[in-house]
Length: 214
Image (cartoon, rainbow, N blue to C red):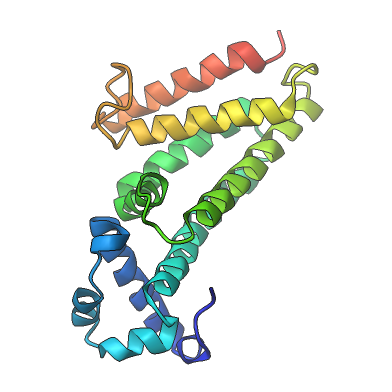
Protein backbone atom coordinates (compact mmCIF):
# COMPACT_ATOMS: atom_id res chain seq x y z
CA UNK A 1 0.00 0.00 0.00
CA UNK A 2 2.14 2.90 -1.26
CA UNK A 3 1.85 6.40 0.22
CA UNK A 4 0.14 9.18 -1.68
CA UNK A 5 1.87 11.54 -4.09
CA UNK A 6 1.38 14.22 -1.42
CA UNK A 7 3.69 12.31 0.91
CA UNK A 8 6.16 11.50 -1.87
CA UNK A 9 6.41 15.20 -2.69
CA UNK A 10 7.54 16.06 0.84
CA UNK A 11 11.26 16.72 1.40
CA UNK A 12 13.06 13.43 2.19
CA UNK A 13 14.02 14.57 5.68
CA UNK A 14 10.36 15.28 6.52
CA UNK A 15 9.31 11.88 5.15
CA UNK A 16 11.94 10.19 7.31
CA UNK A 17 10.89 12.13 10.41
CA UNK A 18 7.22 11.15 10.00
CA UNK A 19 8.07 7.47 9.48
CA UNK A 20 10.63 7.47 12.29
CA UNK A 21 8.16 8.94 14.79
CA UNK A 22 5.51 6.46 13.65
CA UNK A 23 8.03 3.63 14.08
CA UNK A 24 8.54 4.72 17.69
CA UNK A 25 4.79 4.82 18.31
CA UNK A 26 4.10 1.36 16.85
CA UNK A 27 7.16 -0.22 18.46
CA UNK A 28 6.23 1.08 21.90
CA UNK A 29 2.49 0.37 21.82
CA UNK A 30 1.78 -2.14 19.06
CA UNK A 31 -0.64 -1.59 16.22
CA UNK A 32 -3.96 -1.50 18.07
CA UNK A 33 -2.90 0.82 20.90
CA UNK A 34 -0.78 3.17 18.80
CA UNK A 35 -2.35 6.63 18.80
CA UNK A 36 -2.43 8.78 15.69
CA UNK A 37 -3.37 11.73 17.92
CA UNK A 38 -0.20 11.20 19.93
CA UNK A 39 1.83 10.83 16.75
CA UNK A 40 0.62 14.04 15.11
CA UNK A 41 1.09 15.86 18.41
CA UNK A 42 4.77 14.88 18.45
CA UNK A 43 5.15 15.78 14.79
CA UNK A 44 3.32 19.09 15.10
CA UNK A 45 1.09 18.42 12.08
CA UNK A 46 -2.67 18.19 11.58
CA UNK A 47 -4.22 14.74 11.96
CA UNK A 48 -5.77 15.15 8.52
CA UNK A 49 -2.28 15.22 7.04
CA UNK A 50 -1.70 11.61 8.05
CA UNK A 51 -4.79 10.57 6.09
CA UNK A 52 -3.66 12.65 3.12
CA UNK A 53 -0.29 10.88 3.22
CA UNK A 54 -1.31 7.27 3.95
CA UNK A 55 -5.14 7.10 3.66
CA UNK A 56 -5.56 5.18 6.94
CA UNK A 57 -3.77 3.61 9.90
CA UNK A 58 -3.08 0.28 8.15
CA UNK A 59 -1.53 2.20 5.25
CA UNK A 60 0.74 4.07 7.65
CA UNK A 61 1.74 0.83 9.39
CA UNK A 62 2.58 -0.83 6.08
CA UNK A 63 4.79 2.09 5.08
CA UNK A 64 6.54 2.11 8.46
CA UNK A 65 7.23 -1.61 8.03
CA UNK A 66 8.90 -1.00 4.66
CA UNK A 67 10.88 1.88 6.16
CA UNK A 68 12.11 -0.22 9.09
CA UNK A 69 12.93 -3.34 7.09
CA UNK A 70 14.87 -1.36 4.50
CA UNK A 71 17.18 -0.13 7.27
CA UNK A 72 17.91 -3.70 8.30
CA UNK A 73 18.38 -4.87 4.72
CA UNK A 74 20.89 -2.11 3.97
CA UNK A 75 22.90 -3.03 7.05
CA UNK A 76 22.97 -6.75 6.26
CA UNK A 77 23.79 -6.19 2.60
CA UNK A 78 26.87 -4.26 3.70
CA UNK A 79 27.87 -7.12 5.98
CA UNK A 80 27.38 -9.62 3.15
CA UNK A 81 29.51 -7.62 0.73
CA UNK A 82 32.20 -6.74 3.27
CA UNK A 83 32.70 -10.43 4.13
CA UNK A 84 32.77 -11.90 0.61
CA UNK A 85 36.38 -13.05 1.05
CA UNK A 86 35.73 -14.82 4.38
CA UNK A 87 34.54 -18.35 5.09
CA UNK A 88 30.84 -19.05 5.47
CA UNK A 89 30.94 -19.54 9.24
CA UNK A 90 32.75 -16.26 9.81
CA UNK A 91 30.11 -14.59 7.65
CA UNK A 92 27.29 -16.15 9.64
CA UNK A 93 28.90 -15.02 12.88
CA UNK A 94 29.43 -11.50 11.52
CA UNK A 95 25.78 -11.42 10.45
CA UNK A 96 24.64 -12.48 13.91
CA UNK A 97 26.87 -9.90 15.56
CA UNK A 98 25.52 -7.26 13.17
CA UNK A 99 22.02 -8.14 14.35
CA UNK A 100 23.09 -7.75 17.97
CA UNK A 101 24.68 -4.40 17.19
CA UNK A 102 21.54 -3.14 15.46
CA UNK A 103 19.36 -4.16 18.39
CA UNK A 104 21.68 -2.39 20.82
CA UNK A 105 21.93 0.76 18.70
CA UNK A 106 18.26 0.97 17.71
CA UNK A 107 16.08 -1.32 19.84
CA UNK A 108 12.91 0.14 18.31
CA UNK A 109 13.56 -1.75 15.06
CA UNK A 110 13.58 -5.14 16.74
CA UNK A 111 10.70 -4.25 19.03
CA UNK A 112 8.68 -3.33 15.95
CA UNK A 113 9.59 -6.68 14.36
CA UNK A 114 8.47 -8.52 17.49
CA UNK A 115 5.14 -6.69 17.33
CA UNK A 116 4.64 -7.92 13.77
CA UNK A 117 5.65 -11.46 14.70
CA UNK A 118 3.61 -11.93 17.86
CA UNK A 119 0.58 -9.63 17.66
CA UNK A 120 -2.35 -11.04 15.71
CA UNK A 121 -4.07 -7.69 15.05
CA UNK A 122 -1.28 -6.36 12.82
CA UNK A 123 -2.66 -5.53 9.35
CA UNK A 124 -1.24 -7.48 6.40
CA UNK A 125 0.63 -9.62 8.95
CA UNK A 126 0.99 -12.65 6.68
CA UNK A 127 2.42 -10.58 3.83
CA UNK A 128 4.78 -8.69 6.12
CA UNK A 129 6.15 -11.85 7.75
CA UNK A 130 6.51 -13.55 4.36
CA UNK A 131 8.57 -10.65 3.04
CA UNK A 132 10.93 -10.84 6.04
CA UNK A 133 11.34 -14.59 5.67
CA UNK A 134 12.01 -14.27 1.94
CA UNK A 135 14.80 -11.75 2.47
CA UNK A 136 16.30 -13.84 5.28
CA UNK A 137 16.10 -17.00 3.17
CA UNK A 138 17.77 -15.37 0.18
CA UNK A 139 20.46 -13.79 2.36
CA UNK A 140 21.36 -17.09 4.04
CA UNK A 141 21.15 -19.08 0.80
CA UNK A 142 23.65 -16.69 -0.78
CA UNK A 143 26.12 -17.35 2.05
CA UNK A 144 25.54 -21.10 1.94
CA UNK A 145 25.98 -21.29 -1.84
CA UNK A 146 29.32 -19.49 -1.53
CA UNK A 147 30.29 -21.90 1.26
CA UNK A 148 29.52 -24.94 -0.90
CA UNK A 149 31.42 -23.48 -3.86
CA UNK A 150 34.46 -22.87 -1.61
CA UNK A 151 34.32 -26.42 -0.21
CA UNK A 152 33.55 -25.20 3.31
CA UNK A 153 30.20 -27.01 3.61
CA UNK A 154 29.34 -30.67 3.20
CA UNK A 155 28.41 -31.30 -0.44
CA UNK A 156 25.51 -33.57 0.57
CA UNK A 157 23.63 -30.82 2.42
CA UNK A 158 20.07 -30.01 1.45
CA UNK A 159 20.59 -26.25 1.19
CA UNK A 160 16.92 -25.36 1.55
CA UNK A 161 16.63 -27.34 4.78
CA UNK A 162 19.97 -25.98 5.98
CA UNK A 163 18.82 -22.41 5.31
CA UNK A 164 15.69 -23.08 7.37
CA UNK A 165 17.75 -24.38 10.30
CA UNK A 166 20.25 -21.52 10.16
CA UNK A 167 17.51 -18.90 9.86
CA UNK A 168 15.64 -20.37 12.82
CA UNK A 169 18.77 -20.60 14.98
CA UNK A 170 19.92 -17.04 14.30
CA UNK A 171 16.46 -15.54 14.77
CA UNK A 172 15.86 -17.42 18.04
CA UNK A 173 19.24 -16.24 19.31
CA UNK A 174 18.36 -12.60 18.64
CA UNK A 175 14.88 -12.92 20.14
CA UNK A 176 16.32 -14.58 23.25
CA UNK A 177 18.72 -11.67 23.67
CA UNK A 178 15.73 -9.33 24.04
CA UNK A 179 12.78 -11.36 25.32
CA UNK A 180 12.98 -12.90 28.77
CA UNK A 181 12.44 -16.67 29.10
CA UNK A 182 13.21 -17.33 25.42
CA UNK A 183 16.51 -19.10 25.97
CA UNK A 184 17.26 -22.22 28.01
CA UNK A 185 19.63 -20.78 30.56
CA UNK A 186 22.38 -19.37 28.35
CA UNK A 187 21.88 -15.92 29.83
CA UNK A 188 21.42 -14.16 26.52
CA UNK A 189 19.01 -11.61 27.96
CA UNK A 190 21.03 -8.58 29.09
CA UNK A 191 24.36 -10.32 28.43
CA UNK A 192 27.22 -7.83 28.13
CA UNK A 193 28.77 -7.45 24.64
CA UNK A 194 31.71 -9.73 25.43
CA UNK A 195 29.49 -12.54 26.69
CA UNK A 196 27.02 -12.08 23.83
CA UNK A 197 29.87 -12.37 21.32
CA UNK A 198 31.06 -15.57 23.02
CA UNK A 199 27.58 -17.06 22.81
CA UNK A 200 27.27 -16.06 19.15
CA UNK A 201 30.58 -17.78 18.41
CA UNK A 202 29.35 -20.86 20.25
CA UNK A 203 26.18 -21.01 18.19
CA UNK A 204 28.08 -20.72 14.93
CA UNK A 205 30.58 -23.36 16.08
CA UNK A 206 27.65 -25.72 16.70
CA UNK A 207 26.47 -25.09 13.14
CA UNK A 208 30.01 -25.72 11.89
CA UNK A 209 30.11 -29.12 13.57
CA UNK A 210 27.00 -30.23 11.70
CA UNK A 211 27.43 -28.44 8.38
CA UNK A 212 31.13 -28.03 7.78
CA UNK A 213 33.48 -30.30 5.89
CA UNK A 214 35.64 -32.48 8.06
